[in-house]
Amino acid sequence: MKVGMREQDQRGALRMQVSCKVKIRPMDLGLPFYGECTDLSVTGMTVKTSYVPRPEEEFDIYVMPAQTHALRSEPFSARVRVKRSHQIESCSLFELGLEIIQVHN
Image (tube, rainbow, N blue to C red; front, side, top):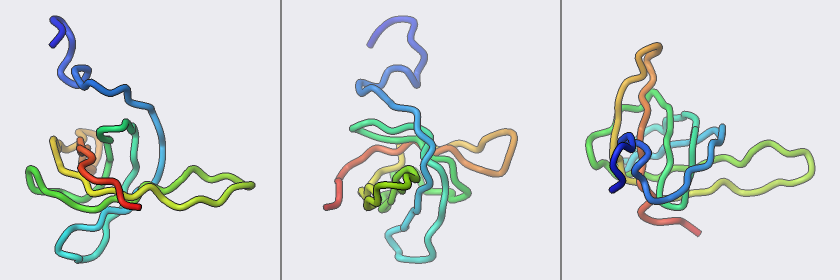
């Protein structure tokens, strides 16, 4: 751990800022929830959503590709685990810190 770094900067993997829609499928197979992925790395992602997960909850997530006119691609899908969750002060959304535990083919 490096001295003087803020908590969110202590992650080992470089995160890329993105703005992609996501679909969240809870393990109980209830209704899906939707949100926006705001950053992504090889080990995890940050998502803003109205879904309020349990601590350490696991669920499937589908990150939709950016809109392009020439290419059509499938969403990135993975099983993730909730590492942090807090309500965003200015709205009723929650920001979720998610660890990628399995990538789906």
